[in-house]
Length: 143
Image (cartoon, rainbow, N blue to C red; front, side):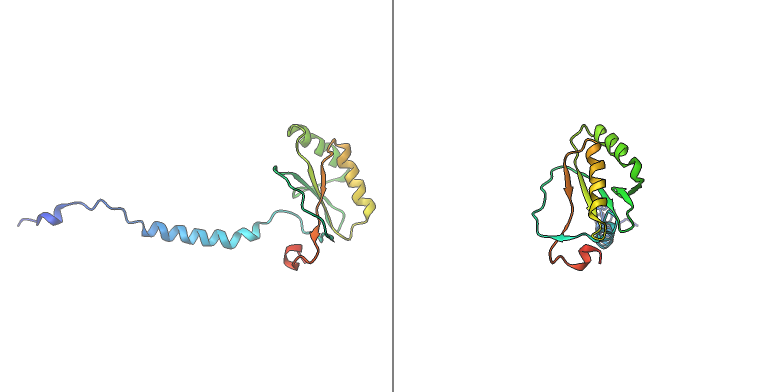
């Protein structure tokens, strides 16, 4: 028995439907989990009316939480080693990186100024204070 000629040819097309299905599922997973991956320490920032600071490069973020714990980005740091650690980071970046200072609204002004002086003693002159815009939604403030 001879097989008809039309059935002897191999199918050379790739079925991409399973690939597209997997990619769509991954896209949905990443869209759902991306908002949960926000970086930083939860602090209740003060609300002020001020323009945003334009920045072209990533800066360090020094955070003071409500318990007066200090963090560089999300890593806790003792207050007595904050200056030397920032100075080392500043030297390694070639002296071009500034710092954003975030503080909980309940922290006394004097404590914030003390941390700011430690940052300045590390040789960093570019310090931006992070605040919330007046009337910002509660979910963006972490309330």
